[in-house]
Image (cartoon, rainbow over all chains, first blue to last red; front, side, top):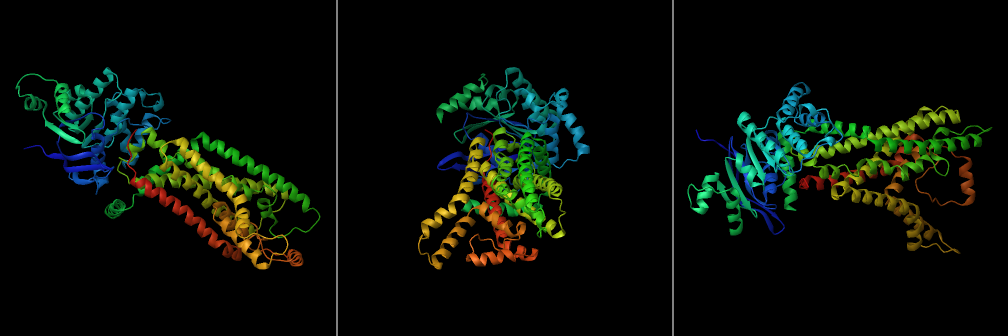
Amino acid sequence: MDPQTIIETKSLYKYYGQQAAVDNLDLHVLEGEIFGFLGPNGAGKTTTILMLLGLTEPSKGEARVCGFDPTREPLKVKRLVGYLPENVGFYRDMTARENLQYVAKLNNIPDMTSSPKIDEALQIVGLSEDGERKVETYSRGMSQRLGIAEVLIKDPKVCVLDEPTLGLDPDGAIRMIELIRSLSRERKITMLISSHNLDQVQRISHRVGIMIRGKMVAVGPMEDLATEKFGVGKEKYTLEQIYMKYFHEV
Amino acid sequence: MGNQAKTFTKNLRELLSEGIDTHGLLVVFKKELTDHFSSYRFIILFALIAMVSLISTYTTGVSLREELEGITKPKLVFLMIFTRGGLSLDWFVAFLFPLIGIVLGFDSINREISAGTMSKLVSQPIFRDSVINGKFLAGITTISIMLVSIVLVISGLGLRVLGVVPGIEEVWRIIIYLVISIIYISFWLGIAMLSSIVFRSIATSALASIAIWVFFFFFTLLGPVTVANAIAPLNQAGADSETIIRHARVQERVRLSSPMGLYNDATATVIDPMRKTTSSVVLMGPMERLLSARFQNPLPLSQSILVVWPYIVSLIAITLVCFGFSYAVFMRQEIRSV
């Protein structure tokens, strides 16, 4: 059986004034895959994500996430989708565990079930030892991993991660990428990862989409993209090269 | 605007399809309340307010005791500790206590946005209005607890200094006075929250709400007379009754356009029943004034409430307008982590 489309947009537009931040976007993300959503800063990646979560309204067109329209039924979407914003923040004077407890409560998870869930989530991201520490003592990499733990609390079907490796050192970035890969494998969570860091994302993505100035210029598995643009078949191209090629074309 | 209508129908649809989100509201409310009570700013604010109130009550109480020595105690003497003296508690609540509302609210929204917690909060399965409602309710609850405990402490002190036990009517009047004061401080909380939504920077929103407070402070003290003198000047020599009335009317209108003036009028006959009317200028000759003073009797409680009712309603109205406006802006705001 073919995997089902879990995130879908049809000719989606978002205007800020005259400027089109998202310009006629058709996006399909299949169930269970890791989709790398690539593009330079200001390409409209975050705007697209906000529309997918019902946090801002599209100017035109429609979006569907898990079969729901995020504009009309944002709560149903938010129950199923875990979102890690770019530069995620925490209540710094609370411990990591307290932060997670708050999110569990917001998701209407009773204390009885949330406690083992929190332990499990902390363990997955490797923060079991630091759960009782206040978040203000956390390093950037730890905060980012705590963000992943927070997303896991609600048992999401889909994870939307906005620049998950931003500001991490190489070691932290690799840990993050591996964490995402293992979550996708073991929990079968569909992942939409936005990033401008091609190198890291191409390593784990099943498919990538390249967005430049509000337009999706190319979508597909890495190998296809390389052949399509360069017409060279098996030869190895890094995503970087492909990306720069598209970037100069637009 | 079309967009606004769309947002509205969207909210309505959400409401119909999922019911009111009391759960999310309660979770946010509890968290905010805990935050308020465990914060240093609450402790500092409470200490400051308690100090000011205790000092003013004590001096008023002592001077009252001296005044009343050897004469029959007038009716409702207990209420006088709230109203007598140059800097009575009544005055402090009107002019200084707005600070409580401002301090509790000036960074409630923009701090979460700049800390990056807001974008995660609104992506949880709760209605967005639960966030703002929960914060507002937690603020009101904090204000109520603060004011009630301060009035209780003051009453205790008053009991000791004056040696008079308040009667039932006095207790009722104090309760009504408390309710009006809570609404009034909530109005300032609304102003502060509004500026925390409108301004992205915490310093700007603090400054903006303090500016509004200071403006009304001076406006209420100086504005009415200045405006009245400009619009309906009183000639020194022969002012006929018509100009005097006009002068007084202008003064009252101007005073009522400030929340502090409104608050003063709303509490006037409740806490100070000897004052029969809310307007300060009543046309009376000196003889009449003397007469009325001699046979002065407090206005009954029910009548007092009747007199101040319109002001209370206006006070609630401006609070709701302020909150409604914050609500409208916040619901349409696009929240990005920065």
